[in-house]
Image (cartoon, rainbow, N blue to C red):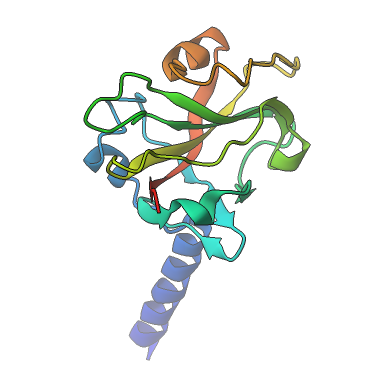
Amino acid sequence: MAFKLVQWIFVISSLCVSSLQGSCDFAKFQEKGIVPDIIREIPEKEIKVRYEDTPIECGEELLQNVTIHQPALTFTGLKDEKLHTLIMFDPDAPSPENPYLASYRHWVLEDIPGNEFYQGYTVSSYEGPNPPTHSDAHRYIFLVFEQPTSKKLRETFDDDKRANFKVNTFIKKRKLIGPLAGNFMYVRHL
């Protein structure tokens, strides 16, 4: 009886831990060439990404029409007293075979207090994925970093110059810590 009780406690606690950690298999970040080719480290936690009625699973493929509008994001476990930065980018522009425009900047929010991404400062407004019709599916990566100080950054980018965004240069210049959270998806043109 005691053994069965211990088994049930283990099963329930395992389910609770896995639900808190999310469903992202972070090994996919290495399998799909994101780590170490694009970023140096695997994120610690999952960003939950939802396009209207469609939640994305880590590494899932979606059609472009699903991703037109800005998604809802949820990430938990970030320090409330810290500011954070969200980056969404495409490392496969204009095609995975020839990414000479990589990375393409799709969305950047800075000065996010704790987990409240909707209170962040828009550095680069959301632009939905738009892979060319002739291209294979592109990877779109979401990353959250901790800002090194509580000083707000408040720098904007020219939205007409989104191509050739140097993600690691951006991270290094701002001395961002992490990635603390992440997710990615593939998007194919209709």
